[in-house]
Length: 494
Image (cartoon, rainbow, N blue to C red; front, side, top):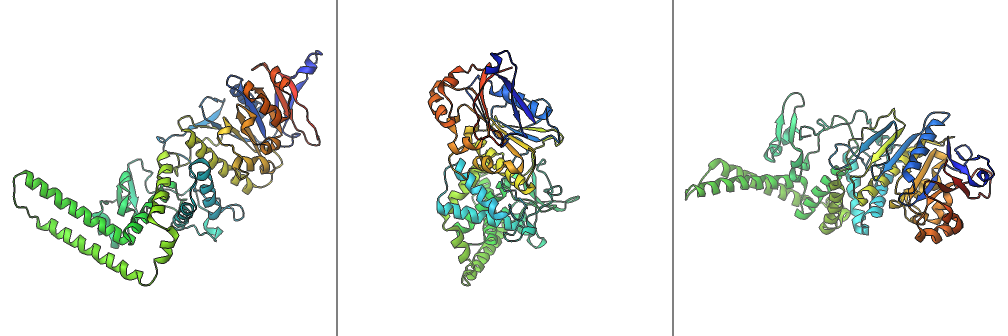
């Protein structure tokens, strides 16, 4: 692949038209850092670079992922998907990489926690431990075993719920022996063709979560699944009991509520005495069952069976803070199990993120970059660039942590066929290590307040920065294989 940035200004003064050329076969790596203030032509240059990459590719076209935070990088023949809380699709950060060496449950759990700490308020040690255990438990409930790679693989072409949620029904996996409890908690029966119990999707909380959604095939857990489990664990911890007792207590509460509603209606009608034998029987029966299961649970504690669970989650306060974090993630509305409907035949996938807040964009992009990098490592060493990752306003995601996925990609991804293109208003937003790792640097015009820092970090003279005229001239440095020193090329936009 090749990109022509413009013409060599020194040669042009001698009436020689020598192009400033980027060649993927000659550069040290495919990474590019492009700096330009507002109005300097970053979007125009990005479009030109993508077009030239695809036109000059002499083999299979690379997949180009464009993370567009402003929604204005419109590219010809691209597949664009907008992400917001209103769409039915999203990104599932709990999706496990099935590679036995580079993937697995432990790495995914640690990746989720690290990204949350990077983009949100950092978890404390106790919160982090509790969240880790919640995630391990939800993976276990979905059939993923930490130490068994054979359980990490899921047939994603087959995984799906009985219903996709379009009918606002969530179908539950209720054993026949427990149907009465489910019915008492508001579940309704659906006959042909599914033959199972269901509740409205927004009513799946509290005791009813004792029964998981009914799946046609095994699936990766989602943030919503983790939130439901965390809430249920918190409820059990608060009451000091197990899930059966919790659901029975809720049945008793519903029966008491039904009796109270009938009593108030009777009082409004002027009836001084009210009796409903059936409602009273239902209430007494529900109370007795709740007492029975609470007693059974209390007896089970004598065996010490519950000590491990208590220790895993520390306290109700710690669990509550973990539930709050998961609620914040779930409320964003973009971490959903349904994959985005990108066209697999299009070389360019454009992620329209303009509807998301700054924190939401950061979470989304960091999680997605982790997925892409893990997939690249699993794919193995490549002889050419097979994926290009374009980050608009890349400073949103950058920091000095060497474990940040952007820094990892800059250092490690070249051999796996990934090229990273970061666009930002100034190179001072990035660490010196990152700048050194990037083989190609393009300066389209930087605000004067960043000149001194940029000159130091990129070893370029301030007079060169002053020479740039937005959309007419730029500075380009390209590190090629075998060269120990690469000069900045003063470039006139062709």
